[in-house]
Length: 147
Image (cartoon, rainbow, N blue to C red; front, side, top):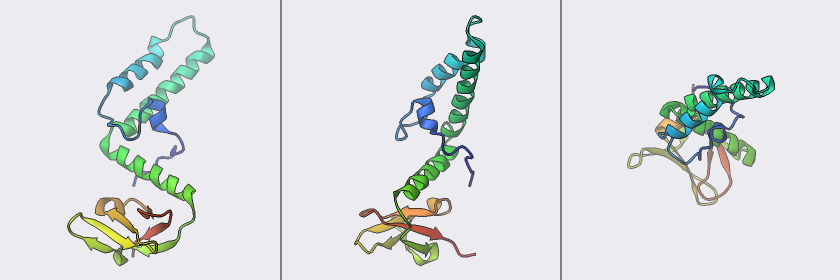
């Protein structure tokens, strides 16, 4: 799993994008990158402003490199989701993936929650996430792997 060292940065807000929106639209990115491009800055702009524009240009470029690529966007979204879960509350239990039930129909692992709801995770997500929330209540489990 790729570790986004600047996971605290909200790459979506840097691009002015909605996390649920498709990132296939490059127009917004291109407008932003041109707006802050160092070569597009006026010569009479104060040095501090130029530095701010360069920093903003770098952030926009980093954000697009993460969100413009389907694979890195998915990893970033999973890490954001996990960060949100860590802030929601304490982990209720630690469960090994091998203890969860495999559902062949929808290709997910699942486990019943004490509230009657269930924890579920796809096979691909199971390799990348460590926290799973119940679909009904606020309980969270930590997903462990043998080995």
